[in-house]
Amino acid sequence: MTSTLAVLPAIVVLVAVLVLRWSGLVAALAATVCALLITLAQPFSTFDAGLVTRASADAAILTLTAAAMIVPGVLFVEATQRQGATAALAGLVSTLDMPPARRAMFVAVGLGVLIESMTGMGVSLLVTVPLLLGFADRRAAIGLALIGMSLMPWGALGISGIVGANLAGLPADVFAASVSQVSGAVAALLPLLCLAFVREWSLGDVMAALATGVALTAAIVAMSAVSGLELAGVGGGLTVAVVLALTTKRHGFGSALRQSALVPYAALIAAVVIQKLLIAPAAAAGIAPAVSSGRMTFAILSSPGLALIAATLTTSLRVIDRALLQATARRSWRPIASIALFMISARLLVECGAVPALASALSQFGPTTAALATVVLGAVSGFVTGSGVSGNALFMPAAAETGRALGALPLFAALQNGAAGHAAMASLPVAAILLAALPDRTAADDRIVLRIGLGLAALYAVALMLTALVMIGFG
Image (cartoon, rainbow, N blue to C red):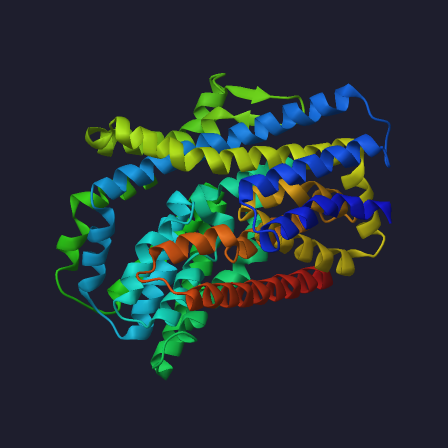
């Protein structure tokens, strides 16, 4: 079937990364070339220059949306690390008298989810891996660190969801609610999964894991309804940390919490809340700057990048210098370039008719089979790109078109977003960051990271599939 040509760029990336060992940036370039060749071959529509122009304009808007988050995000991370945020968090954990199982949940599902939801880019691994190695063996630390990365659909203040909603043509609140319904099951599993990497645990630890899973999911659902995707993961991770801290003995916890190195995190949460509160009054006053291609729109005042900039300037201005700005540029340009290439690839496939053809083919199988296929394609997109943003760029248009044809657009969009984000946790770029955080890295570490990552990704995909079946059955 010619409709499967829409999947070919993802296959090219898979081969390029896993077989040829090319970098993510080169693989993204290969995907773009592949998409351009499909467009020029004209299997779906006649080629014209306007097609490329429209695809490029849409890709530019979507890339700008992501870049406006990535650059301030990296700047925030670099600034907080200079101020000793990692050491401050380690001091915070040391004040808690917890058994290993609950300490694992606190670090992985509390701090890991919280930090990744604020910063993205795998930064949480640089914090959690050293903390985990303080009380867990090497394999356990790897597994727990990956569990902390598992809620990437809410990572980096929900940037993949913001891009995904734009691609799917859904209102942000509708998309956020659907994401909570679809990925909530994965969130509920995480504390229990921590027990699989802890040698000793009790029935009390199991009950604590179940309660923590409920608290995490409830917080994410509530924050999604109140504040949208931006603070959902932050609220979830923070809730887990607070609940576990309040149910254990503490020695100097209050003093550790008041360390100046942790102030930027509080400032960021406050900045996001203030920004959300100001958007509606600003729009009512006619202040709603935006950049649009006519099909894709970047609403400037809604970008989490503004909150990141505000938090950085108000708490970390003294540490910003030329070296920090250069480090920010070095860490930012590759992911932005990769996202831009994946965006161009995806928009070319949309404009040339490949994505509509794929969506039409999937919708003919009915909602159940189409939903399962959407999860598989979404997981592939997240794994091969290493990013929920880029994964959504590849297959969100197909998922949205399939869902629209079946009368279930929010569900299919959320399945794509969730599958891409959860599977990106197992990708090679994330593995590289984790391995870099391990002291005395060995060849065996590479295999352990890949095996655990793929195992968790497969489990999450099954959870999404079961959720989809339930929602379709009761829909």
